Amino acid sequence: MMRRTLLLIATLIAFPASAQVLPFLKKYPPAGPPGQPAPVVPGMQAPIEVLRADFAAQSGGTSVYFAAGRAQLTQQARNLLSAQALWLRQHPFVPVRIEGHGDPTDTRDHALALGAERAEEARDYLILLGVPAAQVTTMTWGKERPGPPAAVTTLVQ
Amino acid sequence: MRLIRVGMFALLAALGATAVAAVQAGAPAATVIAIPPLTSPDSGTKGNQSLAIAWQATQLIETDLRQTSELMPLKPNQKDYYSYPEVTAPTFSKWRDRGAKALITGFVQQRSDGRLTVGCYVYDVDKGRELGRIGFVATPSDLRRAAHKCSGLAYQSITGAPGMFDTKIAYVAETGPSEVRVKRIAIMDSDGYNHSYVTSGGTGVLTPRLSPNASKLAYVSFQGGVPQVRVIDLASNQQHPLLSGNAMSFAPRFSPDGSKIVFSMMLGPNTDIYVVGADGGPARRLTTSPGIDTDPSFSPDGSKIVFESDRSGSQQLYVMNADGSDERRITFSVAAYSTPEWSPDGKSIAFTWRSGDTRRIGIIAPDGTGERLLTNGPGDEAPSWAASSQELVFQHAEANGRPGIYRVSLDGSAPRKMTIPQDGSDPDWSGTVD
Image 1 (cartoon, helix red, strand yellow):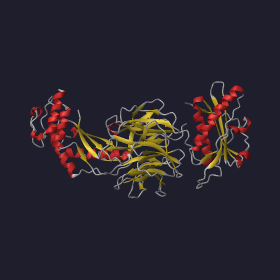
Image 2 (image 1 turned 30 degrees about the vertical axis):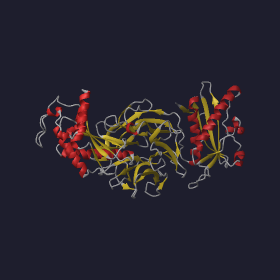
Image 3 (image 1 turned 180 degrees about the horizontal axis):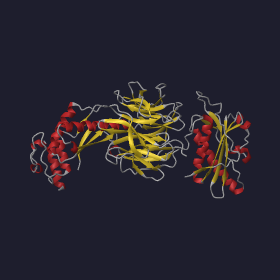
Image 4 (image 1 turned 90 degrees about the vertical axis):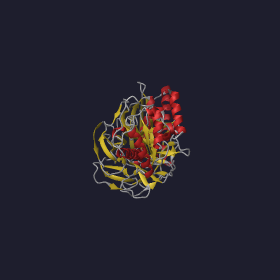
């Protein structure tokens, strides 16, 4: 099983995901038209690592970035979140957590709050695009993790 | 760890202590204080043991006082031995001739139950007058605390401000690489002794805040998935979340009487300041403005709260009444101001100043006047006041980026690094321990 998973990830990385018809994706029912939730088929979930790789590939990334000190979404961030929303609506049984990050040079508590605001902004936009609210939670790392100011959408088990 | 203050002085007079004339407001010169070795009423072999303990105490007091910029101790010399009766009848002329303005005398006596009686007296040398006295029954392992109490008596008698010798510092101990940093809450005495860890490092922790007498500690934990305030009773090591519910809460600080905790909570898109009983209960919202309001800190009389808000577009400091009324902005600058903490004497507010990537520590009067930067950065943060209101502890990033704990005095001298077993951040300095 482990070997098969690794193989699938390798395939995803090697080729544009959209050009591939992966075995496990064939089992999914087709996504419903916009505005209607995709049918949920329990017990059909692929391993989380595979889903994560697919999500990142189909969406063009897991992270949206922010200007220093700001929580407003850039156009680039909205484009990426739109792609994420599409995937999430096709996978309504996959819960996600948006992890907000503050600015590394900010003071601790403001960074915590700003990271939370960024995560909320990203979540609100996903919901605006039709992702069920219950599918998306948020948290903040403040400046506890190195890296640029971002909101990272993470698939959770 | 109990120190029993005793009324052992039969002649415990009303002290009526007044500050020594040598220290005037605006006079930066340090008061020279003599600390001849403490003596003992014990005799024989026991007397020698007692004198050895007394010498230890003398050196501890000297070390304490040397850390201040207000007092300048003369180096204790064993040749300056005096007899037990001279504890309360010192030869003032001798110390006057050596330039001392103040004098500490004292004794250590071994009791039959194995404990020690420690007594200290502080004098104004010029006037030949007693300024204060203090006495304890202590176990030998508590000799350090007894000496700290003597230092505190001397400091308070001379400067009028409480000393910071018998106080604690809590901070976040950091180990490991930056991607997987292990953070634990640590507590130590302000001189670095009695270092211990309060949390195990399994979950991320931030911003420990001691209650005024260091009996409780509030901090922020990632244990529940989002940052939330938890409170630990340090005597029992019992801990609980401050609030029920899943909202993100952070930036806790105790009220000066320890009965309340003021903190930030994020509900929806808005981060506001709330106040709640130190043991929980319903929280009351104090601010409502859009934007991030955080890092609240009470004035020492409990009537006001200083906090930071980015409602104007950048972080600035605001003062409001403790019920949330009458908000007033006190900083107006292109720089950002954050992490305010009100000084125990009420006269100053310490803050982190930020411009570009540079962070420095500064102070400002509560009315917004007298702003002064104390450190050069570039990675300084999170100042916390000593009980004396003359010194701050803060976090400073070393050249390699790793955080350390530093102390800086208001007198303009260079910051000094504290010795801790690993990296450290988010320091918090308690008031005097009972």
